[in-house]
Image (cartoon, rainbow, N blue to C red; front, side, top):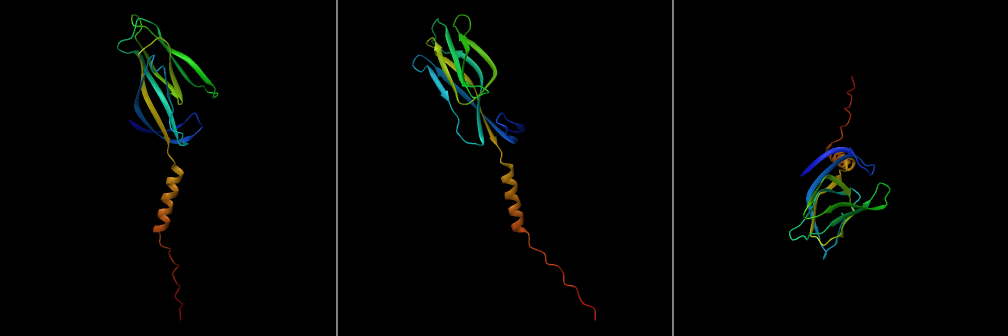
Length: 157
């Protein structure tokens, strides 16, 4: 899925932005208790995770499985928040709606043995460099234009 929209992002960028989305999923267990997602460090690209569901996997035990998310808050400070407390008999799945977190983000199985599956969308926002596109187009036009010389006036005798 890819679309373009004109908006102002949290980083203060203004202008056309091209968005792409990809399916994201990770499984947490006692063998792999945490997963860190970190996007590329490109100045024209921002990475987000749009969390949709947190659910217990096949073979989960009758125990409490707490999933915690660690990310940066609006002041740039790391914050850890429990987002789901799953149990086979009463709450095997939680719908997160469209819980959006900016990368880097870490998911951790704080208690329980899992398996717990975290899924959603990986959103990539590309800032379109409009100014460079316009200047390149103008350079091409300048190369194609042939200079026009003024006409010589004919003198009357």
